[in-house]
Amino acid sequence: MRLPASVTLRVEFTTTHHGQEFDKTHLVSGWAVMAHDALLTARLAVRNATGTSQTPPYVRAVGDQLYLFDGLDVVTGAGGVFRIDPQSGVRKGSHDPKVVRKGTHRP
Image (spheres, rainbow, N blue to C red):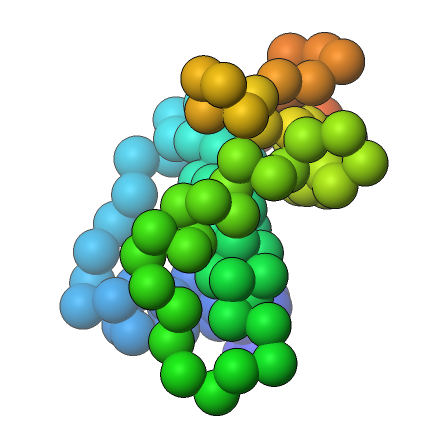
């Protein structure tokens, strides 16, 4: 009998991550979207700070890049398009981040 792809992926994931299980309520909390957007923003800042150099950027250079995500230079994340306020460092956008669900939710 062949297992469905979702079961196969779950087994592979938990095996790879030492059997760690995640609370199913976390799937609908929005944490995954926020974590994705945070890592995406950090990756973009590192890439922008590095430019064409083959050496890792200084921490300060990466931090400075974060404050440049304003105006036309925006982040298009899983939670939507957003900017980072150059004065406060707070995420700003035209809407609050929301998780969009397709289909029906199954607990």
